[in-house]
Amino acid sequence: MGYYMPVMLDLRGQKVIVIGGGAVAERRVLALLDAGAEVVVVSPSLSGALTALAEAGGLSWMNRSYAPGDLRGAFLVYAASSNDAVNEEVAAEARSLGLPVNVASRAEAGNFITPGVLRRGRLTVAVSTSGAGPSAAARITEQLSEVLGEEYEPYLDFLHQLRTEIKRREPSAEVRGRLLRRLSRLDVLNEMRQGTFIEWTPQDVEAWIAGNRGD
Ligand SMILES: C[C@@]1(CC(=O)O)C2=NC(=C\c3[nH]c(c(CCC(=O)O)c3CC(=O)O)Cc3[nH]c(c(CC(=O)O)c3CCC(=O)O)/C=C3\N/C(=C\2)[C@@H](CCC(=O)O)[C@]3(C)CC(=O)O)/[C@H]1CCC(=O)O
Ligand SMILES: NC(=O)c1ccc[n+]([C@@H]2O[C@H](COP(=O)([O-])OP(=O)(O)OC[C@H]3O[C@@H](n4cnc5c(N)ncnc54)[C@H](O)[C@@H]3O)[C@@H](O)[C@H]2O)c1
Image 1 (cartoon, rainbow, N blue to C red):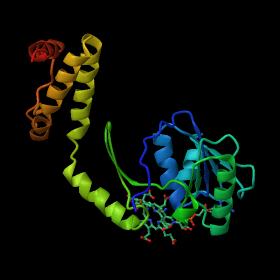
Image 2: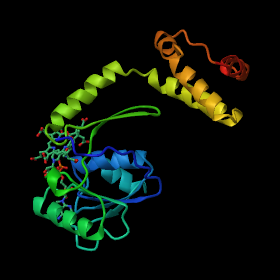
Image 3: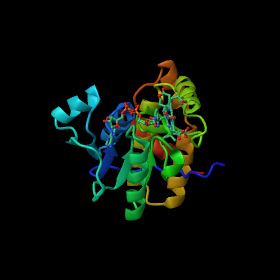
């Protein structure tokens, strides 16, 4: 039954159209803006948070009901109105244009669904029950947030910094591979969790690379 394909989309500068301006649309829009999307909301009303964003110029608001043709130029579409028939019409237009569409009122009418999301800096964990139990997805996400603590954010920044340095310095794919494998075995995550981690200086990085290049 797990037929959905998880992907991580780069939405920076991409136009995303959200139909509806209520509680569900608000969750989608906040996440889309975090991802750098250019958001257009089509809805005769907006939630408080969406109104504030529209007033501040954070999104474009078309203050009316959905009309065929609204999806032109979109990269991604969310049908999140409280009118099920309208959501189905939006899904049909998106499909006719070959656009991916999410339908809040009936998952099967769309071709992608929205997971529960946990973020720790560069770490993103997405949880889906394939639509079987959205509340369960929310609960599992919450449980994971207890296991995956705040230390993952600096840990991934550390890994990113070292990995970038290794790729910049090491011309040999074999040596790079060895260094990157050794990097993942360092005890840094534990040190960060316990608050005993001491920031590596550029000299520490250089010394670690020099000391771990060989077999
Ligand atoms: C995870 C989360 C992400 C998010 O939305 O941000 C999410 N739903 C959340 C909460 C939630 N949803 C619902 C309730 C009310 C209680 C209940 O009914 O259980 C609550 C609880 C609440 O609101 O607190 C009702 C509901 N949800 C859907 C339908 C229609 C259907 O089943 O087809 C109905 C019935 C509507 C009706 O009949 O009126 C459908 C979907 N909900 C999904 C995601 C997608 C599948 C995810 C998966 O794979 O499991 C999918 C398919 C839609 C999509 O892709 O947009 C988010 C947790 C946010 C968090 O972490 O706090
Ligand atoms: N995916 C989820 O997590 C989830 C959770 C709860 C409910 N739902 C479903 O999503 C739908 C929306 O939920 P909500 O809580 O955001 O509802 P809501 O009542 O808070 O908001 C609905 C929004 O749709 C707008 N709207 C109504 N008719 C429209 C039209 N013709 N064109 C454009 N916009 C229109 C309204 O103006 C309003 O802004 C529900 O009807 C339900 O089917 C999904």
